[in-house]
Length: 490
Image 1 (cartoon, rainbow, N blue to C red):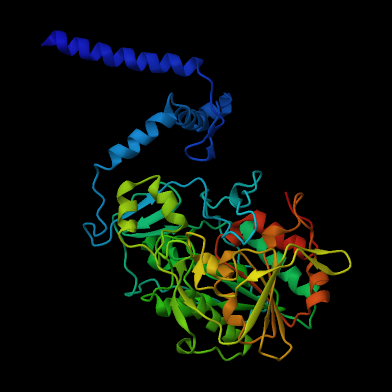
Image 2 (cartoon, rainbow, N blue to C red):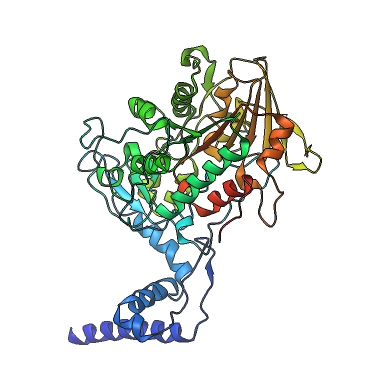
């Protein structure tokens, strides 16, 4: 028997030795095609890094990323994980895991008819621009109230309406609770200040004759995540939004979307498998805007409603952007989501609309690249996520003419969270002008200065609407800055 043990141990030792020797001579990979991310490279040894422990941490990450045959072994590991139990019910009725994500659904993107669907990359010189990077929460200096009109109501410490999932395993930045996937947002005070500065500057350049509104909305984690995430110093989105609003000038009217949404959190206001809110959720944020702008919101029951379907398959359910991250990390969590996919509820405009998309504003005030095949709200979509039914996705510039007839014009600066919000505005304006800041003012994209667009379209109200990743994303803050004529920061 001892001979068998000795033989077995010898085989194990030889395998480990072979892997070790191979790891010294094999070529390190720069990226993982399977994970679509860059891999850690061999760290530089210094005495300072050795004594403060960072060298060993970097070395551990390096060997983890450069393990021999790693890309071949990962699928085997995923298959083995299928044997482990993941129960949507869990021991406490709401099992929770947190999955590492290196990319994010991320800059709030959702395609565009005839447009490149590639998302902008996080700023490589600024880790805070990647929502997957955890930021430590520094001591927060209160910049003082500078004239905001409304503020989000901070979440109560003890709210019996909130469930508190307890079976949480923290890995990094994406949370799965039962059949719901969510993104965790980490605050970054420096970038939040840049966001507020950009909105303040936008209010200045459009002038005192234009009403400027800032609408920041939490994502689903602030409603359905564990208490330690919702209330954490670096992950409490309500506090983050409040602090951004405090840095805005009196020329900016801030909109409290959270206070409206939290009253309806038992409704279908966020998708379970996708990073967006539903149009029902966007409606409640619209009512918050109407309150801030002194408008009468159209009652929800006055809209024609239904569920969107896929143009080719006729399917009325879908698995969203976050499902893709889950499926690559946990077969059990993915199965729970597959058993309860999302539907896309739409609310049709109550007025007639005619939408046209444009690629750029050329010299002399000419809107270029007109595309008339855009529907304000469609009942079908060729895109598997179905969220493309709203304003045709992320167009650089889109103008919706309506039957309202009051000659009022609103300009909306948004990422894809704003897509399902925009159709509600057609009830109040003759013209709705939509701009995706991510499409402009980079080295490879057209230039746009907001006052130049206003000279062509007019503007009574300006709305800057974003979900919570944008105020902590330097890339997006730079896009807002350049629209206002400020220089992008490195």
